[in-house]
Image (cartoon, rainbow, N blue to C red):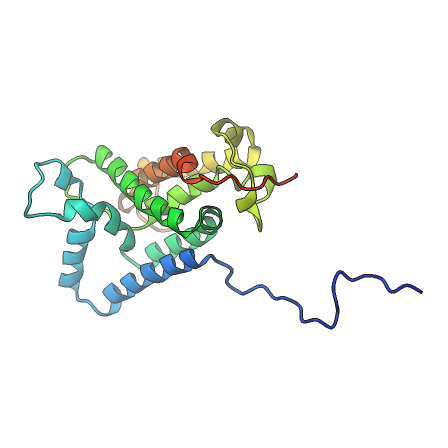
Length: 242
């Protein structure tokens, strides 16, 4: 009588997947976001936090007047604003979506291009926000624009063949036309855009006032990630057979 094969040696210890299976660069990004937030929440005082938001948050008014050598925040604020958050719900919501969509993007691009996409998409979403609110003294903070860029980038490959997990990062890059030809990808993009357009006209979600949501940064980040993804996806992954 032949013993049926079980696919491995039963006496060898089975490999267990770690409870948190995120790329190191995503874990590092989450650690930095929470470290900055906890520092502001529990260590720094109100006046100091206000000064930090003004110095490191993005303000459209800085670009509507001649750049002054006395205020150099216009140099770094298009990037540093993405590391600041205004409350627990703000950072937790961004952290969840960063883990979901940042993970496949990081696995595909690697840590260097992942961080390069972070920096460029932060600037792109900030200036898209500035174009729609030019000259305003509003302070923009949060990683939502960057997270939206990772969502847009992920749409170019995670829905190929309907396989989102666990090997979605190996899928072929879809053209813009192919994304909208795929029912799942098309539905995701349309639902995401409609949700942000509803915020734009004043509809609030999950108890958060629409006036406090920078939908312009979301849209700007998503469009940047979706359209500019081929510039970062310089290596062609092996094609999955569906």
